[in-house]
Image (cartoon, rainbow, N blue to C red; front, side, top):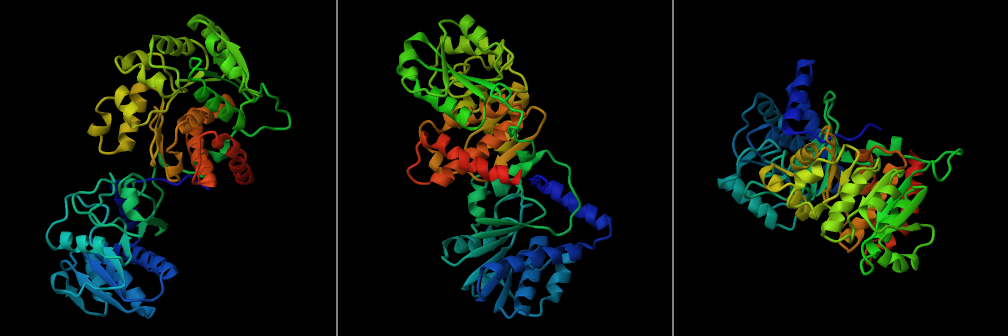
Length: 482
């Protein structure tokens, strides 16, 4: 299957216009959209008293179609309108609705199920007046709400509510998800999202949902001719004696995800602690950045940062690794240590390197980037271009961006990953995939997805030590579909 796109409001509008230019009537597209919503409702709910709330635009036009089709199936349906339909297509759909249309301000708003067709993803300003009042009423009711395109008050391009904003248990959108469907807090307000095909033409984009369709065809499975060195050499730099666990977590994760040879490079004072816990993972000492550079000279990927310490030693070790041919996966302290001079780090990175910050670490390297961007996707893309490296901005809606503009947003984030050490495992996954020759952007996307799936597989009680052992079951699933 082709990767699932995420499209902006403007891109969807352009696709609509392209379909109309190709001979599909705008009213036909509206009829298809309304039919998709009606089918989604029928598939999930038993017939009940439905109130369809229609706005004056095309979103409201979709609502009139939903009302008509549900009524034709025998559902008790009422329509309340904020204003009369304005666009020709919406007027045509309103004319096909045979029942009465009440004004919202005087309508009985009690119902068993609501269809929110007031305003869709193209909303440019906050709700006010009757629209705001009705949406607040819907938010307070225990009865389910089905949103057309997006809950009213949620602009499609940002996922950031504009004042009063609706909430739905089901949102039906068309052709592709928009940023509002994948970015918090909008994503949480949409409930289940159904993407309906209404026959729009293809759209060019470099923004995708992070699902296996995006990267599974290029996942680095071994062949009959593979041997351990062919599967990649990966190193992880350990912290000092009292901070060694994070490096071992990353190393074990890299080994589990397929890297052929994984070595922890350890300061001498940490050798005993590491040796007591390592088996298949190898161990080598280093006492200076020059020794580190020499040990990493022929490896494919290197992880540095987990529990490394925010100090001059970590900074010099990062610069030493950057002089090798290894792809760098920088996490935690290896990011924070450059907060006073991010340009020093950017000057030694290249497109194969990966930065894995959470929001706080992201702010240290890219101050003001999140606040100045309309949403996380734009901020992460700008950061990747500035750093000339892949940037993975962690969160429930993790965004991965490459310097060439490719970006993906995770849909399978797990709350169970909010535990110490989970990020170290993610860094190890990425390094293990990069070591096997996977493109760094796709490796970061695949690692993010596998990481979350492993967490879902375990559920409550997950600790980071569980994740590497859960990896094989997720890989088996992937192997069956690749």
